[in-house]
Every structure is written in structure tokens, then in C-alpha cells.
Amino acid sequence: MNLLLDTHVAIWAISSPDMLSARIKAILRDPDNQTYISTASIWEISIKFMVGRDKAIPFSGYDAIRHFTDAGSRILDITAEHAAATEKVMTPHADPFDRLLIAQAITEPLILVTRDSKIAAYSQTFITW
Image (cartoon, rainbow, N blue to C red; front, side, top):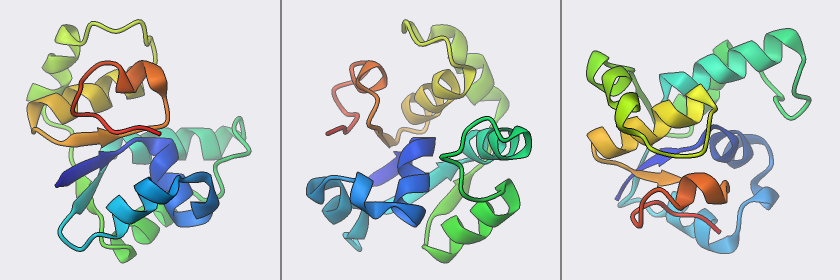
């Protein structure tokens, strides 16, 4: 499976794996699965780390790139098609980062892994716990 990790899932996979369910840990460890981290997640981490708004961000955007790539994840760039596809995302979620992750997952296609039930409800292919 090709998996796109929601920002919080990507962070937890690196810094707090106990926050992930046993099923999600198994999916992420499966060598047949490839994980992707969106550039949008790196951007979100950078902003929250810089302003100190979210104490759950334990590392900078620069560190995030290194941690994620060292863990074997690929960084998914944001394309013009991804940006345009956000206008088709019909969800009550107003967060622009979440809307972009949904658009990327649908466009590529990738399976989005999230703990957010509002995001997971968007597609039956998305994984949550």
C-alpha cells in the first residue's frame, strides 16, 4: 500500500509511537507499504514549531525532513493539481492543511492514515483507529 500520513501520525510515528494503535504500527512497519509525508505536513510542522503554538511539535521542519526520510518515508511535493483539487474536497474540515492532504490522497491516489475521524470519514480507503 502507498500511504500518506496525516501530520500528527507522521509526528507520532517518529516521536511517540505509543500514540499509534498496534494495527497502525503493523501497517507502518510492513515492508510492502511505502509511506509518504506531504510537503504540507513539513510546512505545518515548521509553522507550529516556529510560533511555539503546539507543544506537540517536538522538532523543526528541517529536523522533520531528516527524521521522515531516515525512517524511509518519501516526501510528497505539492503540485498545482493538488492545490486545485482542494476545491473538490467537500468536508466540514476548514483546516487548509487537512484539505490539501485529502486532495493529495485522492489525486495520487494514496491511502491517508489519520486519527481524525472527520478526515477518515471522507473516504472508505482512508485508515483510522
